[in-house]
Length: 247
Ligand SMILES: [Zn+2]
Image 1 (spheres, helix red, strand yellow):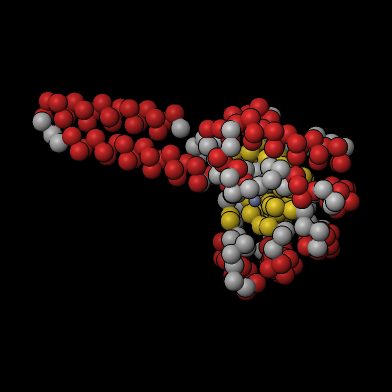
Image 2 (image 1 turned 30 degrees about the horizontal axis):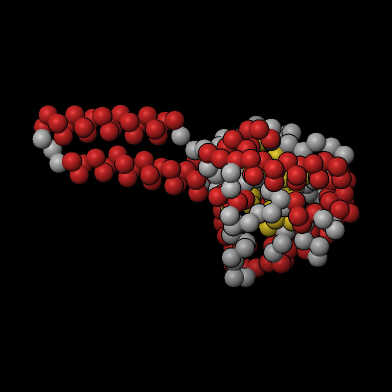
């Protein structure tokens, strides 16, 4: 964000000098202003830009053919166990970013998830549409409530946080810093929440999966459960191994 701000201020200065000495139109000032607004908006929407928050968006591992599967928005009482069954059968470890309120009543599934070697991350407590409108303190409260809930069930400190919708802003940046968690983004978004069919989802994943990817999936989507076995087989046949992140 600092880089964008400096570019904005310097370009504003250059345009102002041009307007004053060369009698150019004042409308030219719109160029740096619009460019800066564009940066602010796209920086919020695209977590990969690391504009407000520094996130880990791919593996950056020395082993080339590694990828990481991540599942957001659980726990889903019916579908999450099916995902765990497939991962167990294929001997694949993944990361689950859990919504705090979805853990209530599903504590045994969380325990199973952890006992089977998967990594657990925080994905806020409510995950409402309005999460990014909240104050930094309200965001921090959601994050900490979820962290404490997970820690108390698995008996270990978690270290990872994924922003709801992948949207970031200055308030969330402060909350994440205070939480001590590492923000995790992704490099491959499956769009499984909007995919029309298992075939459509598999086609996208097969075309776009590359080494070092962090893949965004959702264990609340039936389509994802239906595609998972074939997707894992596809990756393993091409020599990919599945890893989680160091914490
Ligand atoms: Zn989510």
